[in-house]
Length: 232
Image (cartoon, rainbow, N blue to C red; front, side, top):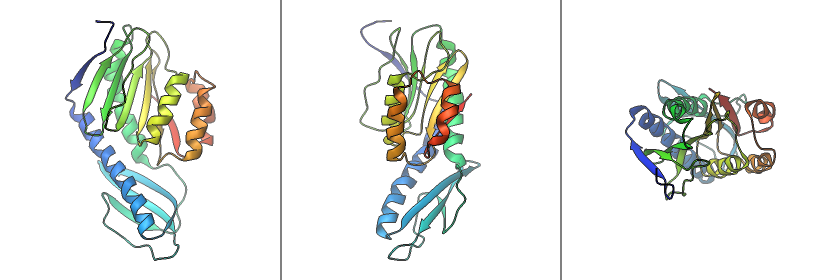
């Protein structure tokens, strides 16, 4: 490999395309929800997105304020209620799990080589990127990153300080999940709704505690309201 540049190849993977299209619907819904709340002067208590047979449905819990909140055309099926039980919707976790399995299939065989990354962009382009021996660097593209995974060769799956800072910035820009693939499997951190400002700050604080192992993230993830983790 030429050590002065990165090698990459485009992937034509139907499952990654399906995952991307569903994730794009989630982003479209999030944008719609922001406009909806402003238009009808509604205060959001919470929202939950579930997935059934690749069909998305959102439960929107609102507190009415000013104008009466009412149904409006949305990019996915919705239900608007006054009360809802706090829980994590299945859509973000399901798409993260599906992406992580694809990431394992592409990246695990490379663990004895250079650092590699799998990236899915908002236009559903997927690339496999080969970096240098100690890192892989991806310049920020003009479109959003929906999913990101990279390897830690010869190591277990841990988030470094740089990984956590990149994660916080990507999640704040509506990225769904970021994963690290190591010899022991994959560790993913994903958002469960729009990333809150409080959780963004907490993620940046978490960077100072790096490296973040599976045991550490599971012991502290409960303090986050819009972020969760899974191990595969």
